[in-house]
Structures are given as structure tokens and as C-alpha cells.
Image (cartoon, rainbow, N blue to C red):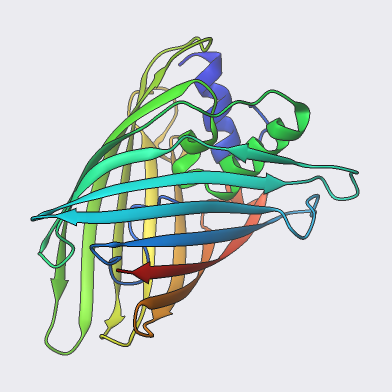
Length: 269
């Protein structure tokens, strides 16, 4: 593996400063076939170091056409070192794709994350670090000169008593572009989620993981990262507010990241 990707993986696994939001599964039921959403994630790093307003954010949109759903998201990070006079806003790499009908048993999605992020200053570099560590399941969203192609397949089951179970896998192929040098790499994301969900409320737990497939060196523990999540959402007409707590379960990563707390608001059309 080249130094470029070694640094990315080291930052995700061991907390090293070198330079998934899109978790495989969330702890609540699927988003509406048509709607917009705003999600904010506040990471808690070991030893602090960030201002109170440092957040990892995402604007999402979904629009159903027949049995398919057009999906898109734009990640951005607002970050400032604690005590610094100024911070930076980093616009991440947007995702565009298509997904299966959220009402069916099959979970499917395919799309690309386009390389538009520009880390042109120390402040933006710090913002990229915040996004990479705080949202390590989707680290390519905050990396410069990186094109990502990914697809998701899975299965969902809903019982008559309002309990649900979902399992999914998501290969993500990352390709250096522009001024970036290095080899292309393949990640494999996976997740399982279960919980209670009704028309008014949903609550659940989720376990997500990411493995670096194209690296043969080291053991499984050195090439994987995992997290647990718990959260829920309520439905008030068109509005669906939700909360989530994400906790890393790998000892190396938890030395840098304690947990992340997030809120989300979806407006269905």
C-alpha cells in the first residue's frame, strides 16, 4: 500500500494525523422516497482540541422515479482548533447515485463520490482531519483528489409486530485522481441493524464495520475498524427528527475518538 493510503488508513485506525456519515446502516428506518435532510455530527476527541461549534454535516436529497430513488449528499465540516482565532469550512466530496425502493425487502444502491474537496490551508487540513476521524466509516468524503465508486446490497425484514432487521454490505473502490499519487484501493463496509419501528417512532441499534481488502499485510484487526450506534427518530407529519450516538469499538481508534453525537432532520415531500 502506498504512503498516501497508508496515512489515510492510519488516521482512521490509529488516530494519526495524515492528511463510512454514510454509515452502511442507520439505527432508524429508511428515509422517505422523496425528501431532503440535514444531519449534524459532533465528535468528542480524547483530550478535546476543538471548538464547541465544530461539526461534521451533511445535506441529503432523495427523489423517487418509478421503482428507483435518485440520491445525493453533500458533506461539509465546520472546524476550529480550540482557542484559535479562526477556523475553516471544508466542502467534502458529494455523492450521487440511485437506490432501490425503501419499501421493499431488497436494499440496493450504486453511485460515485466526486473529487471536489480542496484542502488548501492548515485550517482546512484540520477540518479534513475532524471529518476523517469523526466519520471514519466514510473517510473518502473528506479526502482531496479521491474518486469513490461504491455499491450497496442488503436485505431488510419487517415483522407484523413492528420489529425490523437489516443486513448489508457495501464495497467502496477509491481511485486517486488529479495531483494525488498512489494505488487504487478497495474497502468493504458491512453492517447489521435491528430495532423497533412504527409509523410514529423508530428506535434501534446498529453495528457497522470497514475492512481494507486490497492490503495483505497485517492481521484482520489491523485492517478493520468498527463502531456501534444507537438512536431513534420520530415522525410529525412531513418532519422526522432523529438522534444518534456512535461509539468506536476498536481500542486504537477509541484512543483518539471517544464518541460522536448526531442529530438529523428530514422533511418528506
